[in-house]
Image (cartoon, rainbow, N blue to C red):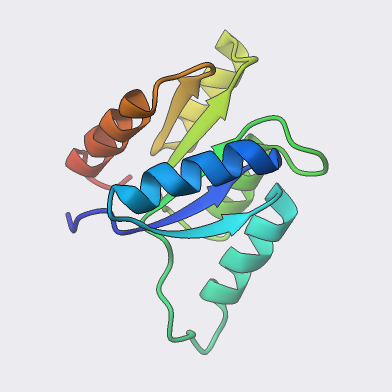
Length: 134
């Protein structure tokens, strides 16, 4: 598997999105930001468009779960319906067994509970990179 380079970061909280972008950029990742699930879906649809555009899909999606309009799980479900198998990290402060079961059923989805240390996020990214694609 190729190394993770390009991250699609989906977070509706501006401050949290800036912090995550900073940490990821300092760790050497290219980061594309989306302030909500709908905008992230637009970005992915444009990248999946036919004919293919010049920019490849991100290597990983990091998304908040609770966002207005389209939740993180809703975004990942839409990705899978579009045959987009990009792995994802779902960040949530409100995780439960049902949500984790839905995430597991989608394949290639790790769940990270808030609050978390940035090192925990980077370690989870490293573990996802080591696993084969779904």
